[in-house]
Image (cartoon, rainbow, N blue to C red; front, top):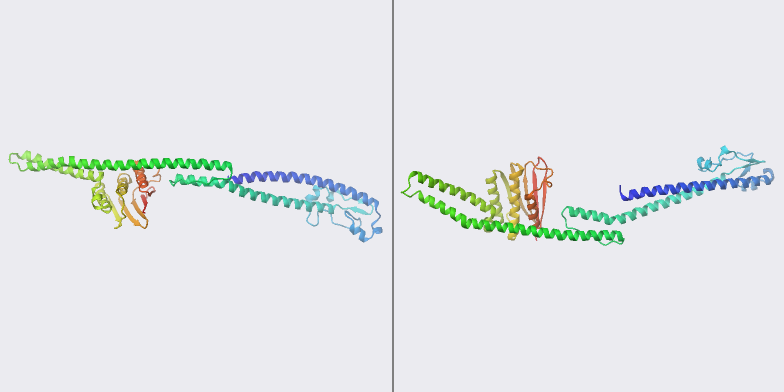
Length: 404
């Protein structure tokens, strides 16, 4: 239940209690006033003469008295005075109307005045209650506005948006809450920046280590394998070797060639030299071709001819992002078709990887190291990555990178 509804119900109960108690006291006092008025008019009826002696003009000016020979309205039957009100005042017809001489006592005028005053007081009470509830609504709305802002800011933080700062408040308690929230947001921003910086450095260190390992393997181990293969090929033409030895040399050369093929795939996976030599577009085409060969799956590739120029680190992060997305499809999606779209639009670069695999309804809850590394690379690129997946309907990974 909302704060206003809870407070409004409480105040409504208080108003009803106050109104009920006031009505009881009002009717009790009015009953005494009617009784005193009837006593006074009864005394007056015994002191004046008969109606025939007074004349019509004087009779019309008398209150609460009328000739007993006339049939008049009983209190509560005319002018909208409810009968329950008349009974509450003890002036109903059932109690009997006093007849003194030729005069009949009729308290209707007094009852009508009391009813009109009661209606006016009730109307004023109702208007005051409406004004009070309106003021209460505005006050609660004003007081809870900072709480709504805090809730909205916490939702933004939960969605990964930058932590907002709330303005100072005039009410001390709310201002203390806002001050503590802003302090928490500052500390959270500091921690997020620290974590992002460390993760970025870790990813860059990982990429540098991969490049270093690739160069060492290429320059050292690769040369040794090439030398062994060349030597084995040379033994095939040695006349001093018999047929069995030549067969062993041929098999050794074939094994070296197989090792070299796997070795080249490993080097390309560790460090895409084609990106340094031919650029990002060619590296993406080479990545998809290599992935199709290794995974046995088909990938429909769409790349804009003119991609924006990115720095070396950003190119590496983008390449690794697409590499990790394709590897996740091969490992976990059980898909038969994959689509990779790299689109350059005004101000943004969009990358989307889609598959027709099994998908998952709770992909974010099952996120592993691969998805986390993709999120960190997207953060390093200054972009935003979104994962859309539904069980039985495949998965879509969308990366949006703002361009200067």
